[in-house]
Length: 139
Image (tube, rainbow, N blue to C red; front, side, top):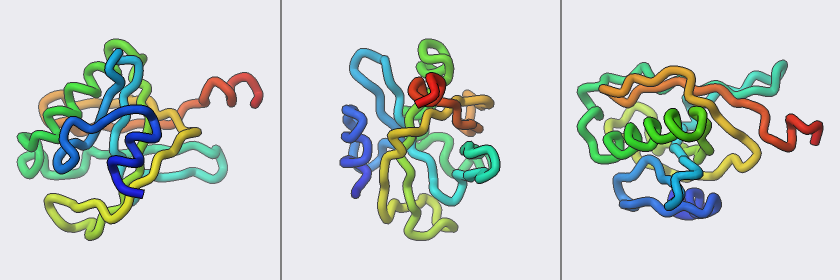
């Protein structure tokens, strides 16, 4: 699956297929972010995900259009959605490359992530998974 298809599975469209790292619903009811596979950790004991996108050199990417757009969407998620976002997992062709290129992407439709730390100046953030409504109801 490619990035466009992965985002499309949530019913959202990327503004720019080449540089967008995120997307949102037209009515602002949903924000979807790219999470790099090598930074997305799964704890088998607690069955939870955590994500840390704060360890990169901000100067490398802070002014990139995709990061500016992502900061806007994270601000939206924090202000209107309780910090909750959906996830597209991207596998990098080379994790050391700057900028990274996506080899493949896929959605995690059963996962909700909550932004728990956010640096508005750089776009760096941390997130943790939270129960989906069906999981909360015992489903």
